[in-house]
Image (cartoon, rainbow, N blue to C red):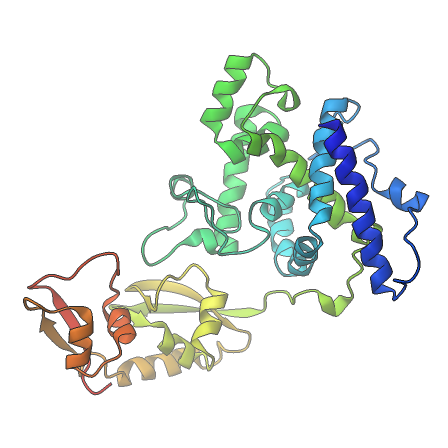
Length: 367
C-alpha cells in the first residue's frame, strides 16, 4: 500500500507539472519538482470532518487519506466540473444545512455521491444529488414513481437528506459514523459495530466503498476549499450560473403535455425538463404541481396556460384503437400515418412490455 501510494504521488506530480508547463507554453524546459509544490500536496494535520478530528497521525489512516486525495487530484477534469457546478448548487445546500443546524461539511457528501448531477445513478438503484435508494427516499418523504422522481430534485432531496442525517447522527452519535451509515445503510453499519466491538470508524473493517467514502469527502473538502493551491484557477465567468427561475402552480384533472407548459412559459420543452429534472416522460400527471419556469416567465403564465389547455385538440381528435391479432406498434403507427416514436409517447408505452389483442391504443389522426 505504501509503495503504491508513493508511486502514485510522484507520477501525479510529474503529470501536474507537465500540465502546468504546457499551459504556460514552456514545454521546452524540463519539469522541476519544486519544493513548494511537493509540500502543498502533503496532508499535514489537523483535519476534521464536521468538527470531528481525523487521526492522521496514524500511518494507516494517513495512507488511506493520501490515496483518495491523490486520486481526486489526478482526475483534474472532474475537479474542474465540481468547481463549475459548485456555484449553481452548493449555495442552496449550505443555506439549508445552516437553517437546520447541521455542519457545513455535509455539503461535500452531495459532491462525493453525485458530483452535483441530478440524473446521477448507480447500478444499485441510487439516484439523484444525494443518491437515495427508492425505499429510503420514500421513507423520508420523496415522491418516487413512474411519473415523478424527487431524488433528482435539488430542493426536495436536500430536505430529505437533512432529515436522514439528523436521524443517523442521533442513532450513532457522530457525524463520521453518520456519513458511513449514509453510504452503507444504518443496519449494516450497526451490525459491523456490534460484531467488531468498536464504534471507531477508522478502526472498523467495512466494505471498501465505505472505507474510502469519508476520505473522498475529506479530499473534496480540501480541494474545493483552496482550489488555487492545487492549480485550479477559475475565473468568475468559468463557474456555471446559479439557478434562476420562477415558480408556478398547475392544477389539472388530466395529464398535461409538458410542451403545453413550455409554450405557456414561452420557452422550450428541454428548458422545462432541465429546470424540473424530477419529471419523467412527456406528461404531468393529473393533480397539482409546482413547476419551475425561466425567470420572468411566471408573468401571464396562468392565462396563457389555461388558454392553451382549452385550445388543445388532444381530447377532440382523440381516437381509441383496439389492438387486433397480428398488430404491433409499427403496423399501428403506419396505419394512421403516425411516427412510431410519437405513438409511444402518446400512450406512454414501456417498450419492455408487449401489446396484446384487446389493448386500447390512443391515436390522434391528422396530428
